[in-house]
Image 1 (tube, rainbow, N blue to C red):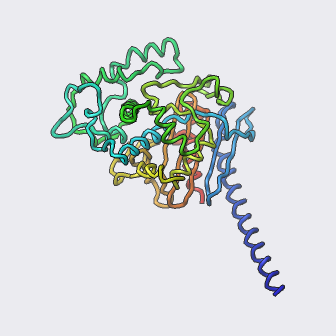
Image 2 (tube, one colour; image 1 turned 45 degrees about the horizontal axis):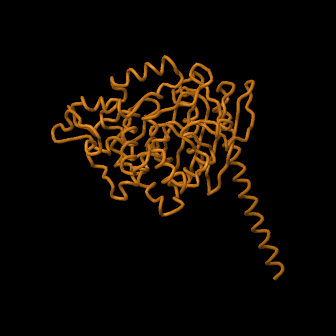
Image 3 (cartoon, rainbow, N blue to C red; image 1 turned 30 degrees about the vertical axis):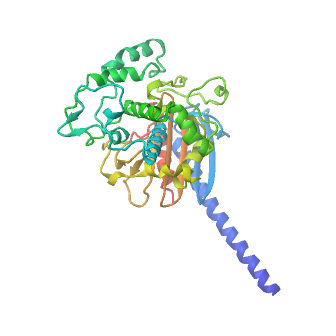
Length: 383
């Protein structure tokens, strides 16, 4: 009996050693990959990285100083997540669909406070689904945006979106005449998500921001994410680096907040990413609806960033290689680039937050994809 117990202990010890060696090998490969990818970024660049594998999160923080990588603890520091915000907005729309408050096939006109000059063409009209999937064909920068944009560029050039209001876009829609069949071509549109935010606010009887707080932040346990930087959180906000290497200012986006306003931490975004794989409660089951690939029929343009991807109901679907299918979304603002991706097949998730503009000349890889985004994709492909 004692011999059997001893052999049993040795067996479990051997398993533990083999498991530890495997984890150690994976961690070494991960660190080597990260260091190799970010070494060329400029001084002052900071990255906060989380990797979920086998149900365990690994967090890494780096800052470049004097051409050297310095390890830092920054999982509770704030970064702008840019367009990853759109996945929150899409989630709120899918919650309303689940509740029966609207349908993806609803005409946009049914949810507008103004009348479009002509809202149908050959029996087709712009729908809520078209806004989510960037296939509405509406202008992302109509003429009615010109004056508020020029005013921002004159007085706050590092904050170009701060003067846009829903009224400016409604003015454009009042003169809009549909002369094409929507839903066919993908064309990225922040203003379309601004409209989704207005729809969400109208149906919920509260602002888009309040809806995010009530329906996503609170049930997810996301407690250190914000829509603006102020005295409550300024000391934890990592300063961004613009395309010209200057200090970035936090973006205020007003009407297009639903397209890119959230400022978050690695710890909060890890909660959000993990919830995509396994919602922590039944009340968040609607998150899975945003992962619908729509038959992979909405192919994104074949340039460097979008090549090999299809648009779903909120998330982008990687189709580039069958061995590593994953869903993801990138984010870019004046001085920040971010990535969230996950694979249902492997149970892996990756979050990369950085304080470098995607347009900075040192922030682009040889294939022109922003390095923080490319890094996130490469981590998801690690064996």
